[in-house]
Image (cartoon, rainbow, N blue to C red; front, side, top):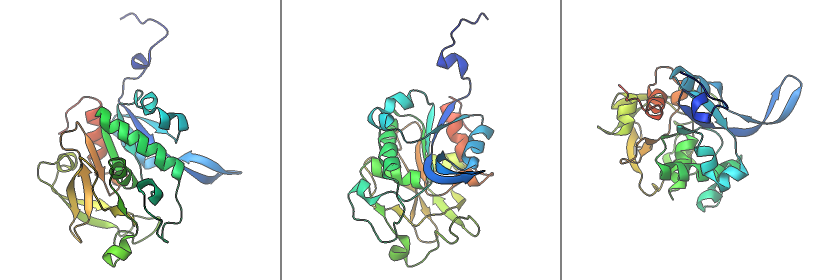
Length: 254
């Protein structure tokens, strides 16, 4: 087949393009200690193992004003974990436990999530990303679970998934159950905030078996719109990110 130049974007990219929203944090490597747009490598590797092309998407003021400029480049969007969502994003005063927020990232990701869901672009929110998904649809958050539940079971070891395994019950027939391949799913989690008031059009389809905390939300009529409170990128056995990539590529999952 004859190829004409210049190549268009669609000509050059054969894998589904999965946008991964990044954090902006102070980071050190070599002799450098500077602000950096970054993301744990296991997000990228999970997308690549599933046959997708990972595209890192840092906060962008122009993209916040015009999300379509970014979303037009993507076949799916992933909002990753990270720092607490600023309570000002959903109109609440800040709890004393909320000490590190990134408002520019919050407003960018809320705008991107809201428009991606409007466009029915395949969407996955992971941990903080699930919380952003809820806020983007008008919901709010529990700011500090130990005050709400009386335990630190959802954040046992800060900075680690060691000892964080717990089971989540997923609604029969839900996207969460189909994407994971089971209705009782063992997860890795790391958070002290959680869903409180559920956003418009969202349905809770997963609950912690320990305390019934909402662990999965989705838009039932959407193509693929799912938020999970756990970290599938940290679990090489998880099928969830592969299910997103398959949907983004127009392939049906198992």
